Length: 406
Image 1 (cartoon, one colour):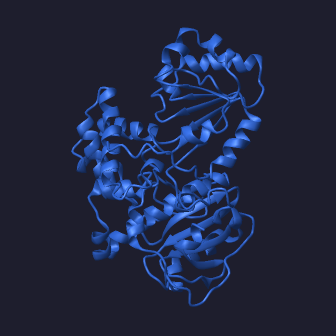
Image 2 (cartoon, rainbow, N blue to C red):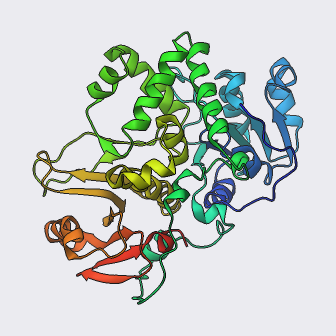
Image 3 (cartoon, rainbow, N blue to C red):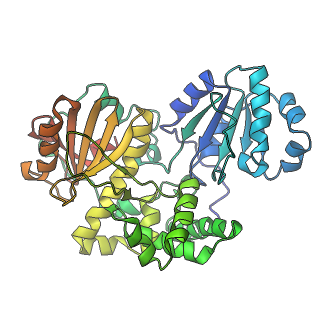
């Protein structure tokens, strides 16, 4: 994998920073999860008074873990904690059971263990914070500001505009959210190397790394589609058992971010297939071998990866409001909603359209959902590539991509 410049980059605030600070104020142990190279260590280290960085400090930690941990200034960051094994969690359990003071330990890890054994040692003692590839607001330095979704949940609604120039370009879809690559003129070699590194994890666990890399490329070509799992394993030329192992590994390395299907007793014949996404749209494009030129030549293809990009913008915002990111599709495909954000009993729905002036027809699935879910439907948005904001129905607005990320 190409190594980015060693010059330190300015810290850009993350939407997860506030959640991390809240967790430190209420829980003795905070687990910081997320894909490799999304900035977990950088964000966590800002709150730590001391640190153990594995594998460098492996022998120091494992020689006498309890004594080592008790002697370090709090909060203690343990980076890549999973390299020390599950026994470390039992040691931490003993320490915080004796002293449950909040904010003692930060555990950053990029690969969750395949199993924690018959019980999870940190139940009731730890809070989990997920970090994801950066969205556009974070990349532009606005991660400390209240997000579009936070403002929307609090009751703010879009204000109509007229005559604003469209600023979105399909070239933006190739901008990666991995902090280390944010200043590279061409991130594709970095992303290819990143995928190879993830695939090597399969080799470390006794599986075929080359087949996992092939499976990643298949998933990249299926980006933003709700398809049965068999289509994945058939296309990747693997069997059902191998796919189950790969799916588990990709979930544990946080490289995939599938969107579960929305369920409601009031809506009949909903499909249960998840929509499949990689965590970073630029990574998906690189693995699928798709360039901005290809996107501009094929609008249907561009529409799928635009949807992927919008989901990447939404995920950290959804985390910040404690919501769930889902999708909806009826069994025969009569109705489909790209994203439903469920926050408590409220739902906020999103349709993504490649176009500069969506109409009420483009909002028909949102209108159907509104009419079927009644007061639970709080607001709907048609996210488009134009410049203006305007109403396209009761409680439904057309908004530019730029509004979603501002």
